[in-house]
Length: 101
Image (cartoon, rainbow, N blue to C red; front, side, top):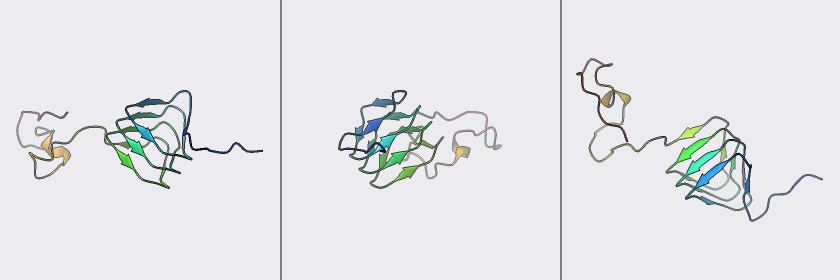
């Protein structure tokens, strides 16, 4: 008989969960890293995922090796979140690299 999911989220022993909320009837695969994130009921993360500062809804499937919100973009100070604003010299706009946090 196959194992059934329950109200308590199933988390692989290699996964790391920090300051996060996991919904019911959900599974997290191996080598999963989640920080300050909410994942809704019935959602599935295949493994080798990195999610930070995210909000994943119900009934969502996240593929293996997906990264969601790896950094905090300063949306209040820029008109675009293009990589160009962080790597000025690469795009020929100057020499200083903008701070990315």
